[in-house]
Image 1: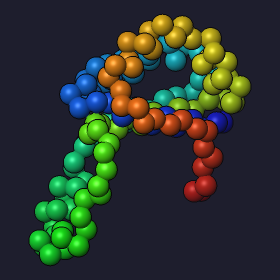
Image 2 (image 1 turned 60 degrees about the horizontal axis):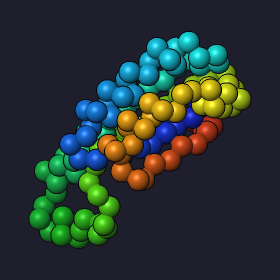
Image 3 (image 1 turned 45 degrees about the vertical axis):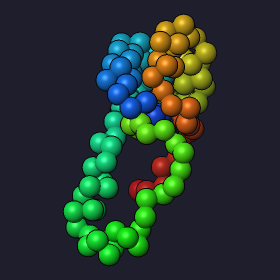
Image 4 (image 1 turned 30 degrees about the vertical axis):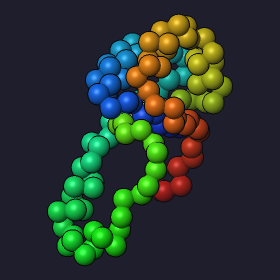
Length: 122
């Protein structure tokens, strides 16, 4: 079994459109040769920060300033897929009609990544 993980970020306010796009692909994946399963996770943006902040004193918070960056705010999505082989996943990717993907691009931030992973916890 092969695991592929995809990380994308939706622009602020576009989370519902990105969620709907990925959920709408379910039937296409379920009939794909070699597909096992897929999880789609959407970040609860700010939940971790707020939980930590509620437990820290102002002095502790001051020692851990927010990172400075020029990244546009957004919501992360993680897709975790299992396939029987790398070839099965790549064959599926190459066989898909890419026209519909263009609908998604205006809602995404530029940062994204995808890779095959191996499990190291047993």
